[in-house]
Length: 86
Image (cartoon, rainbow, N blue to C red; front, side, top):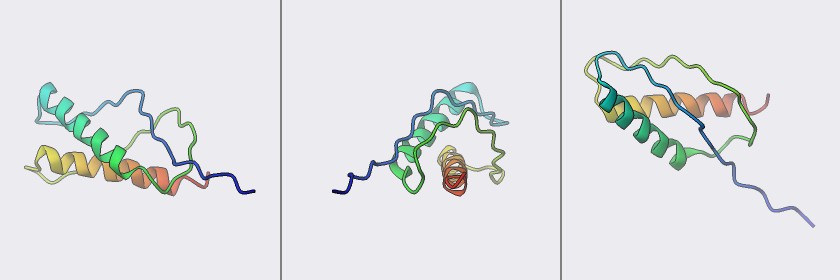
């Protein structure tokens, strides 16, 4: 009998974003949006624990908070899926 496949889960203990030109409130909104996008797109990787992840994400000058959140979430998901074989 086959075991049912577990859906990958994503738990982020803490997220620290440094977004030059934005205040702390904007940073919190970007982090919240990033979390929501990650929750919606967290498939395609195997469940495992990662102690820390450090990524540099570039967004075009004048990017909106939503555009920055999408760029950050894409970078995190790309990292998770590319290192899922590790």
